[in-house]
Structure formats: structure tokens, C-alpha cells
Amino acid sequence: MSTNRSPMKDTNDRARGVALVINRIARRIGSVVAECDHAQRRLLQLRLSPDSYIHDGEHAPSSYGEFLYRTSGPLQHEPSARDRAAGRHSRR
Image (cartoon, rainbow, N blue to C red):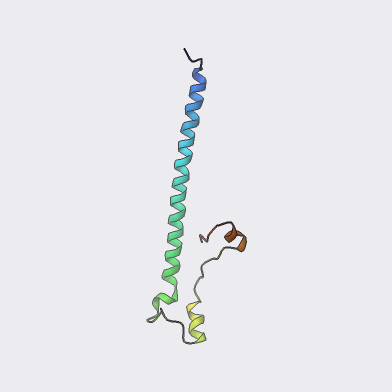
């Protein structure tokens, strides 16, 4: 039994396979870059937070002024209710 596949069809199948592999690799690289970006933003947010420079920052603020000072930095973005229901989490 011989197969009657043309060489052109084999070439097209190989090209599709290579394209799929390249697409997967590109998506993984993009995912790694996005995660690194998120980690860098979060680290900057934590470093600029006034709580990290307060001597006794693990306790609740003792006055309203201290509360305002602690929350004066950039706050983490919370996803909308629609995004939370869809299972998406904050990445900013």
C-alpha cells in the first residue's frame, strides 16, 4: 500500500506545525515578560509605601492623621465586579 500524499501537502503540514510551535514559544515569552512587569510594579509599590518606613508599621494607626499618611501612597488597583466574577485578578 502506498500513500498518495503530495509533497506540497507534507510541506504545508510541517509549516503549520512549526508555526504552532513558534506561537506557543512567543506566548510563553510574553507571559514571562508580563509577570516580570507585574512583579516589578508591585515591588516598586511596596518600596514606596509609607508603611515600610514606619517603626511600628504592623499595628493599626493610632490617629486619623497617621491613617491618612499611611494610605497616601499608590493603592493597588482592584478589579471590577464583572472582572472578579469572570475570575480575572488585578495585575496592575
